[in-house]
Image 1 (cartoon, rainbow, N blue to C red):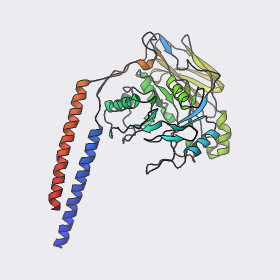
Image 2 (cartoon, rainbow, N blue to C red):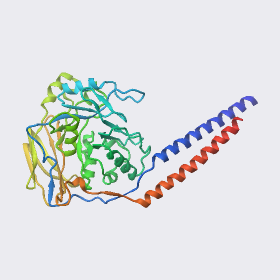
Image 3 (cartoon, rainbow, N blue to C red):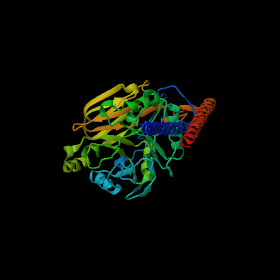
Image 4 (spheres, one colour):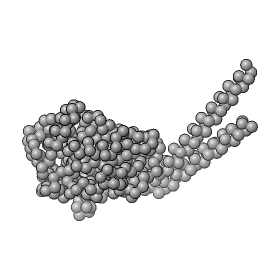
Length: 408
């Protein structure tokens, strides 16, 4: 009985030591990964100025629109595989559904494209909040990521580091990311594109939060595809690009320029792949779009049930019904306007936003500065982290010493 009590006591002691050591190590990793610049963020300020930025200023109507899947996952090596299908299988399936462009953005690794070879696109993010970004054009996968991004300046620091060596940074699934509330999205900058929400009922409020605060960003729609054999998960959310070719160079140039719109489609056939293949090539499209003398105009290949112009704080500026064309003259107090078209079979089209700016001061609304580094707070913050890591290291050292004495 006494022997059993001694063994049980030792086991409990060992368990406590192991648990305490792991807790200290994990806490140290969290603190170290929290190192960051600290920023002062500008207050939300609606777009203003005498001019209107037209994202479709460079549209070439002779090119038409190429349908793109810009966020898909494929089979990868290792235990973190999130898709059971190869890039070739995925590309073939999307091609047969009328897509022209298919890109792969696997988590924290580049994927060989079945036709283009190596394409430097990946989805970055190790953190538990699912703060993920698609990174275009970076030669290497960035290993830095705050494990628990608590502060907005940590999120901004991550965006800055990713954008430094990238052609484009896209903020993914904001509606499913912990911590990306209205206040945060009205602070952050440094990314070019936001991914629209896959929850239709939210009516893309995350995008409007940023736009209403004067943070100009384009928008894309993506399947974020993981399950190729599920009809409801494939060819539902796409981006229509006015690009001369399907090459990476042309696609990323178009994404940076703004000449594209987002398309939502229902699950044609409800699981019947033959119907899905037949109906997808015939989706409604934009025929012409642009701005002239303050008037925003759009025409479609088929009539829409309604066409809604949305502005500051999601205010409805104008709605047209049962038409294949619509227009709206931006008032002086309108900071921006974007278009949503609703079609009879459930399709929706979302355009990029037309926004006010001063062309004499900047080339586009992207040029506005929304944050700056606070040097003194950066020093104090990182010194505090250093102190915490040092204290944790001392605590770990004492635990290990006690462990050694216990074994002896």
